[in-house]
Length: 182
Ligand SMILES: [Zn+2]
Ligand SMILES: [Zn+2]
Image (cartoon, rainbow, N blue to C red; front, top):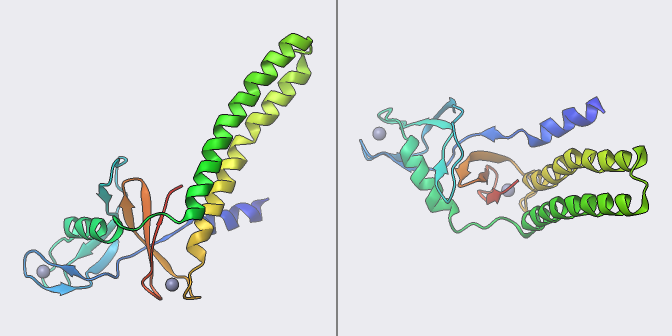
């Protein structure tokens, strides 16, 4: 079990980075910015607003390129849609989250009607609610599997930031862009 969690965290962890050239608004230098680690950002962005975690500086003058990177992220990823498998997984998740509560309501009604509204019914109910967390884990696992495969055969996805609530990745090997929702 512990091994499974380690593997899960390894799979879910992503590497921050930025390998796309940016246009410095101060010195007009165009180049891949210096990556100086990353900073956690507060708040959740809705709509299609970018969130950049990477600390990026112009390699020429050192100007902070956080906002420039945000604009670039929008430019790069607005037209990128999440893979079909990702969307199907999200629908599965939504479906389960609707079906499971409906089943619970159905069970409660059935239990009342059949008069077995005893400890047995509670066992079933708690059993069902216990399934919620593994389901979330499973869906996330399936979604992030997409980051570990690439048509180029050498998947090496760097996390560039969030666009709205979807994560934006770029394969360092082939430059393929990938947008995931979990
Ligand atoms: Zn500059
Ligand atoms: Zn690739």
